[in-house]
Length: 432
Image (tube, rainbow, N blue to C red; front, side, top):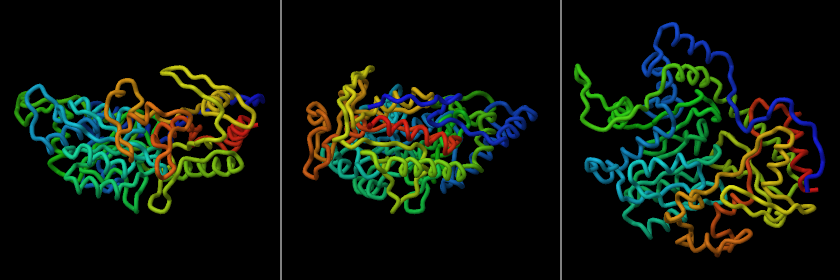
């Protein structure tokens, strides 16, 4: 139970803020000096070259956001699977799409942009990513599905070989959302290279940033060319403005590309700093009834974007969450995410709840949700205090369980060991 007072940080300790190094402004200045301030220029060309090389794919297209890349990926996948849509319809119109459940809604919304119906696949405990067992169960229920969207949570790669094997066996297409896992590898291969169409993000909180922006990644030349065309309003190669299909204003600015270009050389350094933060937390919490977010180090090298913890079920005090409000009952020797986040905030530091699973979101509450047991909606409705257990002893609704007991810790790579020690002491005080 948190009752102690700790000194506040003079400057707010953020969850994950941009870390600048100086080279970024050089390339921004270059864009200014050469007057290439629009969506063409040397910075964009160089970002695309570096992104393709680092992510181990043949082609990269620099876009205004990772969400733009995901949207155009859905459009491509829908055309691949179902053919050209009717005028006025999306490429996924009326078709179900399997997708990661515990993620940010930017992974899911582009399905709806193209008229698709998201079907949420439950989370597995080893990496907090899409459960291959639940995915196989989903194909048993909906064998007609031809598109699967898989995200890598908090920089930890999912069980991508198992997932891809299932996808290929059912003749489906993988769209990989590697927005959070730039620089992470699975079996020595970069995330963002496993799908037909892949996405990385340079949003302001990501491991490297342009303040905004993202890249579409693929090994298909025709797909890259299509995305490049769509992202510039689908202008045809004519001497006037000729348009024969729907386009979008999705191209990356040469100014933002200058920031990304200056950031890329520091990717490995940022990963090393994030890893040190994770390991320091893990050591600091070794005597508490908590665990850090899991890392499958046998098969992958995460980028450690965010350090998270999950409280042991028997160490949880009572906590009730509504749609926008939360209540908890303090209890000696126990705690909950709300108490810990409040305690962290009291010293001017920023933590966050774990991603609220998509199947719990009001906007998607009626969408199908599949666990390894089958239809997860009945499980969700019956879920109380850690929930019903499946045959293997794990919660039937794994994503909901992680959300109820988990939280994201301050993970800014500019945080000093002394500052992190104070956060560790605050968390410890919550269990006294």
